[in-house]
Amino acid sequence: MPWLSLSAFTCRYIKGFSPEHAGLILVAPVVQVICSPIAGSLSDRIEPRIVASAGMALTTAGLIILVFLQNNTGLAFILVSLAVLGLGFGFFSSPNTNAVMSSVDRKFYGVASGMHGTMRLTGQMFSMAMTLLLFALYVGRVQITPESYPLFLKSVKTVFIISSALCFAGIFASIARGKTHARPDAKRQAR
Image 1 (cartoon, helix red, strand yellow):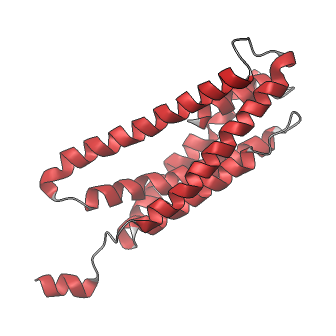
Image 2 (cartoon, rainbow, N blue to C red):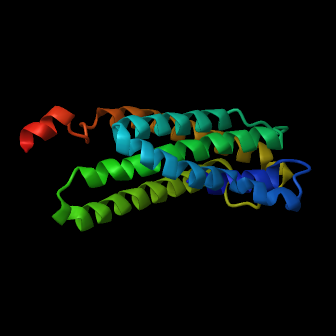
């Protein structure tokens, strides 16, 4: 996930960033915790794919914002981008889970849940592997010091560019899935 690279960037790269503000980096998970129940409830009323796709679009926007990080980027810029990411994750996660679990019969809930968790963790591992590979390619095996900041910033931007492109493709993958909620007239005909 980009969280680790962004955390490292914020803690080591932003000049004047003091330890008493380090907890502010948690803005994305806090926003996600607040938005996820709202998004889950919303996905019960309208198609989960629509809510999840909107969440993926917000996530893409948050990552695109982070592509514009500079050596003098202020804390407010980072916090806003993290809030947008948290909003995107919040509006994607619950509706996506709803769509996955609604697409299988009750007897397959365990299998669907296991596959969903496996895919989520695979994506997280891929993100971390990509981030570490890019850091290794750009920065190498050195301690992050002021001399390596330009290469570190370049690697961080590359991570966010690639992640933005992948999430942008994810919007279309999310919207392309079939309808989860049956039409009311189809439910009546089934009775």
